Length: 373
Ligand SMILES: Cc1cc2nc3c(=O)[nH]c(=O)nc-3n(C[C@H](O)[C@H](O)[C@H](O)COP(=O)(O)OP(=O)(O)OC[C@H]3O[C@@H](n4cnc5c(N)ncnc54)[C@H](O)[C@@H]3O)c2cc1C
View 1: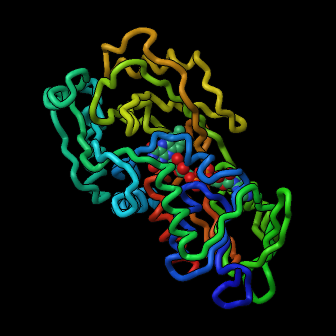
View 2: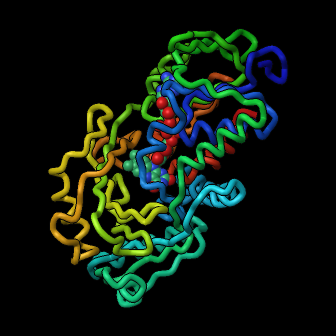
């Protein structure tokens, strides 16, 4: 495949076929560029994008003017429109963030102010009584009702993105790990891949969207200043499935804890209810769910749902957040590091794309494409 200029094999190569890499490929392809997506695994979306809450966040948790706030709010609007246009299932079911004690109400009010500052619409601060009328099993002193929050079929979304890329002549190469890149004289990159049939290709632009491997892949780009590669931390989150009927129709979240949104209640599109994810810093990605962590989850859940029966929770899946901070440290913003950061023309390297990365993915793709064009 020839790039638009004919000088390179591709106008743009994206490393990583998770939701964010595919959204970058879609945004670049829509602008008329020939796109190649390299994925180390045998399928798309098997990384962080397959092990999460599948929640479309409204965007009120993040500091105003941060990338997380801007890209989440914009990404949510783009995402609902994309899902609708591509017949991908979603449910704009809404969510309640719950203060379980009056002492938590100021934190809820602060979230409501943050929502306003972040231009998040469709938010109501409601009394505990109103919240319990909406959700009779809930224990609440007050709640923030976000009407715009929803759940969706994230895998269907990624397949729709891939379809869009391929419809424009883009190429996905599975089982094709990125091994390294070298800037070319006069611009662009030579990219080496591994796997069974290693090849070298050239591209005018390069996007690194490797999720948990972001730091490793950036380290393999010749000339990338090592001191600009942030430290990688892994924040594991374990989920527990609820046996029996889903107790709530909306998603239920606690007041957020530092570093995570807190153990929350979600249900998928099939109505299957889960609680999680908790937060555990680990040395390397590991997806086993330790049944012993259920104890902490029971305690968290019973703050919002006193009626949770003993033995109702069973270990479900775990996901790992690509974090840029350690325990107790403030949570940094998403990093979309372009040439103004690292000095390499035609390259954007993404770091720390944890929550709300799924929600923000289309907006991240737009921002990356704008940066590279
Ligand atoms: C527990 C948990 C809950 C979450 N809940 C939500 C939520 O409800 N809503 C929300 O908006 N966000 C949520 N998130 C965040 C969201 O899941 C991520 O931000 C998003 O999925 C990141 O997508 P990605 O494409 O950057 O990474 P990934 O999906 O991990 O994709 C990266 C890809 O790069 C590939 N790769 C790695 N190295 C190489 C290489 N050398 N060569 C080629 N390919 C390579 C990997 O195989 C992988 O497929 C959650 C995250 C976690 C962990």
